[in-house]
Figure 1: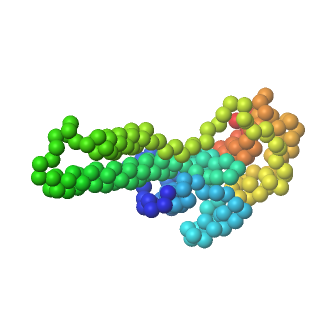
Figure 2: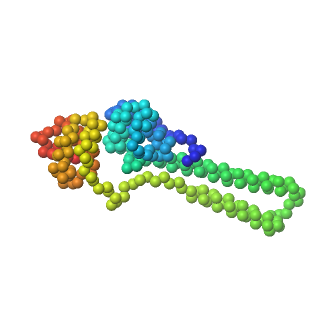
Figure 3: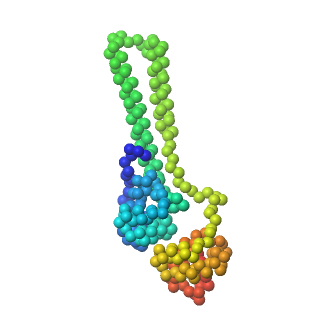
Length: 254
């Protein structure tokens, strides 16, 4: 997208969106500002932020924010507030992809309109020059055959270009989950659970959590677990709400 200015529209009532309000209630305007800083970076990077081992170190330096705080808030935007989307390679926002798609369409339409305008202007100048050179020009139906053929060829090219412009569509793919491609769940290592709990700064006993689900064969009720991080967050929320084994036979299921 060379030569296109990087700008995007910002809805004046974006902060009233339920997802943004939930973000602000949890992390304040600092979290809201971090979200839109990430949106700006996505626009600069062509719609997506590519993951790599030192990604959060770079973002922490650029945005002047503590790395642990940054990771925690991005994790919440992905899983708690559904403001961002991720896969194994990228982090993105569908709104950003749509913005860039619309911007690319406008840019191409503007370039094509300028090109067609130049052709039309050239034809007009040639007609005026020809009229001045011929004091008594022949009627159109009596003009030389080669001249009429050249005019028809130019007009046909202009019509063809206009048709192509109307049919031009620039598509930026938005990944969708397709049936039958669900990733198979793999139980986490205890160390990974401990690191995740440490990152979220919760009071979850990682060993207790791990032993509990290991003994149940990594089932949530009667269904296989799909997201162990979500299970940790549910355990965390239940502990905050004060559930115990006596109050609920299975307080950490979701």
